Image (tube, rainbow, N blue to C red):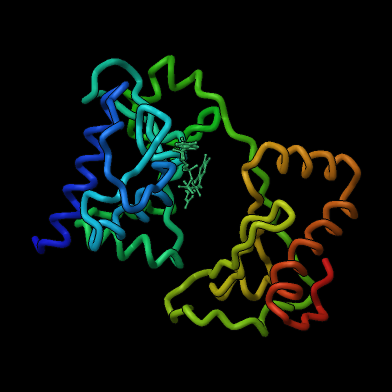
Length: 250
Ligand SMILES: Cc1cc2nc3c(=O)[nH]c(=O)nc-3n(C[C@H](O)[C@H](O)[C@H](O)COP(=O)(O)OP(=O)(O)OC[C@H]3O[C@@H](n4cnc5c(N)ncnc54)[C@H](O)[C@@H]3O)c2cc1C
């Protein structure tokens, strides 16, 4: 292990260890940089800064555990017992920085075959073989998170003129991301059957306010939903991307 990597690992171990202490006295900390929030964003930032600043990078997390919205929850008091993912767990094909980080840290990335068997119970996912997990009352009690996903069929493939600079020939889909108008990302199909069908899938933020907003629009009818979809995509591609996409009409 290189010195830099050892230093970063030590930092991570230190914050992980500290995260388990409650009420630790931080009054004698010396920090050149303070990172507020131990979600994946803060952790990665601190991890990179530690290359040059070592233990003078301080990470502050208000909760007892690190991870933010990336987190699994225990189903009992046994730390070795089953855990259920209650937050992020998927990596998109285009998230190169995450793949690179996993490789750098020696973390194995699991590919879930499309044919199996993620079970979905009240908002939580597990592999269907995890009978032990599914049997737990706590698992059954998990409350789901409301999200909105809209699949659209288009008369013309207006998105064909957009070039993804990172696309490779084995990509099945590419995603364009934004935070405008409750749109999270749109998936542009590259797989032949989906591309031929002119189908896109837009995934909208899991922010409850946005989910409720989409629900209210759905009650108003398809035209309201389509108008809002168009607004989000125009923000992404026309206003921010500077593109002229005349076919962008749901
Ligand atoms: C149910 C769910 C599923 C998701 N699935 C995926 C997925 O599969 N793939 C994917 O890529 N993304 C997914 N996401 C999104 C992903 O989880 C987030 O984009 C990502 O975790 C955000 O990281 P972050 O560090 O920016 O923020 P957060 O994870 O929100 O972290 C912020 C941290 O700051 C701490 N904090 C806040 N205020 C203070 C303060 N004043 N002092 C100290 N600490 C503070 C918080 O406690 C928290 O730990 C999902 C999100 C949810 C909710």
